[in-house]
Length: 426
Image 1 (cartoon, one colour):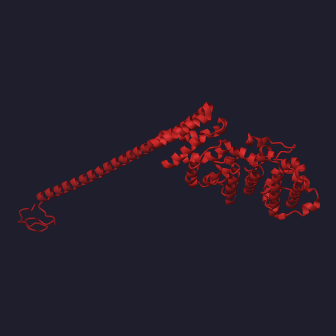
Image 2 (cartoon, rainbow, N blue to C red):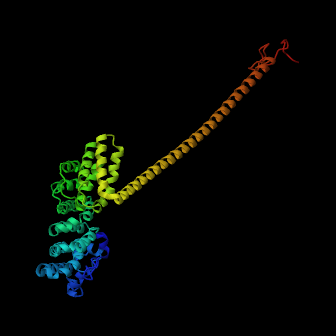
């Protein structure tokens, strides 16, 4: 509901997305002297962002808004907070350092001026909408302002923790180190607004585990040493459930056991099924996996106890929904696995067909080569046989002839026989 409110929020007939026009209206853009004296160094990024108003005019407007907030106080709150908070946050991404500084101071003054009761319906939707900005400086300042809200309106922030924690946690993995650090500080500040005295000492470790997953085991050990006495509300669950869900996915059985024990103890003190319902799909499937897949009987018993306590806290409808979500997720996983197996089988079949075709082609080429070799050998044998036959005929002819190989008579040894030679033919 809070996130949906960012799309249609209207306060004092001004929408946050359109309130930046108020800065232009205060600047006197039509004055020629103002235009000629604009800060030319701020025309790069601001021009790409559609900021045609001179930088010094925007800076002056922001300073004026800040002055009105600080000097007139609560009398101008209905007009200032709803009309200029989104614009001030947007100007935090300006390419002009003077405009950025003025925007940060103005946003701080607006949050300080606002009543705590304005946070759920006015300030929080604007901050959430600005958190999706592509400018890292805007996100950095939004996180700073959320941390400020944790000081000015701690009760209201505590009630909004189920909505704020996932949004801030997503910024922990931002590529900009400034946003990363600001998200960690903001997460610690807003989680510290939780009023549960049992969980309060463990909040720093839990926040550290959220920011650094390798610290999950340390947070689980501290939570395991916690004795739950006070009722557990949705804000407390929003802080603990992400770490507990990650603990159920740890490799070591002792870490899974710690998470199961904490869930079992915590679930006994849940106030209403509505408080724990949003976190059922996060914990129930992981507990079911532990009950089904883990080989250690003691750990399975702990997981089963935690699952039973959580089921009682969820109620029938929530349990059915969680089970349905778990079944749907498992079906999707099975379908994906089946698709992967089918793809691998098709790939193997295609590979096998290619191998068979290649072997068939090689066999055909080998057969043709062998046939050619056989024909060559046969031709060679025929030539040798013809040569032998020719030599034999020549030898036989030589036997029948009176002349030798040199052409001389074999009887008298002369080329022309004597009259007395036996082979002389008249």
